[in-house]
Image (cartoon, rainbow, N blue to C red):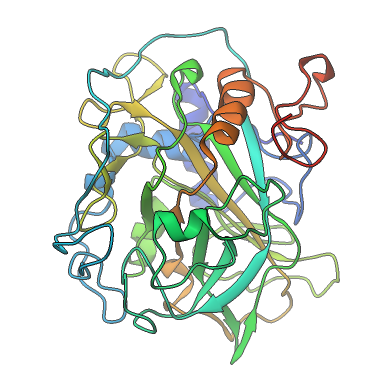
Length: 384
């Protein structure tokens, strides 16, 4: 059941903030079908409230974060095939220029999204974004999507790799810190749900990711309060009837169908200039609320609207979570990485059909509530 509209009134924003402070929420599912998952539109009520209240952008959200031994963001640049001088800047070729943030209001549609369903492929203490060409330099990560992702990964190597995603054209790398219960890793089983949504009100302005775009979402050095107030925070850690948790829930029922879940949204506004920057964030920003409206727009310095990625991960663990931890640290150190290696025509077909077309699509680009619209991909999840 859809939980909330992503374009919210000031009353709903206030209510969302109250719910957050009280730790209340709706029923979470460990697995979702397109008809049962949350509404598309990118920015949740809590997210929009944070943006309106604090003017969050990617820069503001991460200001003041200190370096972290084992995952130092700003100091990790190293020479690589895509960054020969090791300065951390990878220019887009060509850059996107002449774009201004869209303030248009297209016809209201509740959904504008599609899913990427990708399974875990491997774990490794590598991070090709933060520690390129430095195997073993990172904390342990759980990788989904591209089966070849490691410290040496580049756009070209990912493009030549294979994928665990349902759509063969999605060779992107998706990864996050490995979850442990005690010393035992807990890996999500089966295809996980990664949403691609419109993060701005003008969903018709969203365009596909440029090939090779990469970024980090969240920060392993963040405090518990920074995690809770992060613009990507959706409902925190969920388990059973417990939601909006910063820490792992202590009341997680020991039932086979119950899993630990988290949802977290990525920034979706791009500067149009760089595929990566030294802190792996500054080229991206979260949408902001257009003054005098309830509409979400890209900030002027990051005017290019891209899909908003949202991880919804389900970990097969429940019961006593007192010994649960992330490889990066406590529960609030959760963060994730995205490295775009989609086949460009396949990604464009899904974005145009589902996001710009205002549908609620599965991984084929099919909306079961609008069968007349057809699907973007065939039964093999490939372009027809």
